[in-house]
Length: 492
Ligand code: PHE
Figure 1 (cartoon, rainbow, N blue to C red):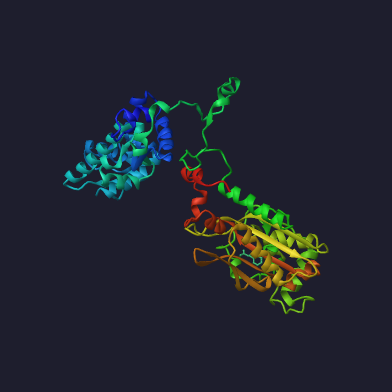
Figure 2: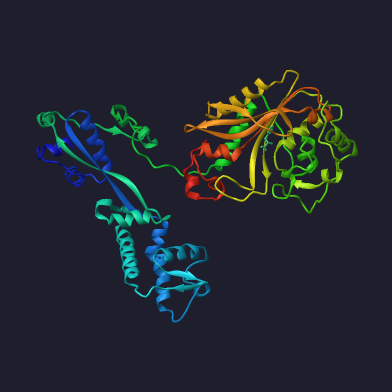
């Protein structure tokens, strides 16, 4: 390349000219050789970055079949009399999944949908003009093909518009370089230059011969841009669960599991939640028709009855009133994973333990940015002679520190089944976010189960934590199967 450039020592060379002059076909040769000459101060190299736009998959569709709004508009313009949504669906102009988005696009253009009928404004010039501009933009980009078109040659307002629509256009950065000899490059004695093999790929063929013995090997440049491999991998939530599991196992905990279907008795009575507590009512709990009830041994419900009615032997005065074993036997979907830990204590009251579980829970919640009716909790207990509040706080803090959130604080809170009770908050982007509850099980919980030692317990929301880890402001993103988002998630 240096020899070729010396043919016109004062020239500012572009890529194509150098390809010609060197009789190369691959632009990577120019970039590679140019880079090396630049590092040896034999050439100066300028770089200009520019943004290149191309059609994405929906854009290709639009180029082939017309933009969604254009197709609906064409159909609308051919209709006589009133037509509505149902006619559109019958006409097969758009696919079912596109209909909603199509109507939204028409509304933005000023076409109303009143009582299911389309209302077109009397003057349609502006609509036609807008559609024409959009369609032209799409065909221009379609003509640019795989190579794409630089932003400077495109209509910027159309770019702004289409960039907000999903899957129509995508961009990448491209670097345009030029090369020019430096005085040092100009004064090199061309006759002294030797050609040497520079090996970039070590192949079996190369190793069979002897050329490599005298060759130079090209170093890897880890700063170069490279395509992101799109590989199969775990769903981000599954990957997060695996990471949490690994942390608790590493901290010496054993994993426990439980069923989604449980009884009000284990979900609530065992936890000393009063039977007339508002959270028991239909709005929070999914009670089941089948099984409507699940039998619980009388000895068990009697223990709960004593504690609830009068405190039993715990020194507590209980909630008063009359305990109903029918209520306790009601079948339901667990509303928290605390059923698993309390059952574990009931099954192993005399064995000290450190256990955790990650499981799905169900609550009658309306879906919004921060709520789902099905979500997961991370739950754990430490039961041993010296279990204490500081031990509980340290454990929870250590878990979050290992997750990458070293700033954790606890605040007083209330749960019917713990005393003292804590709320756990984690600092994220300068704000304290509530991620879970914790506390020491009350005697009203542990005594009927025959447990002698203090039980430190905590439960936290997995999706809330996932929102921090994946930097989301909408919890629904985790479950909408957005392929683009999924493939761009880092491997945890
Ligand atoms: N079960 C509580 C919840 O669902 C969390 C919790 C677990 C609180 C254990 C205290 C002890 O929010």
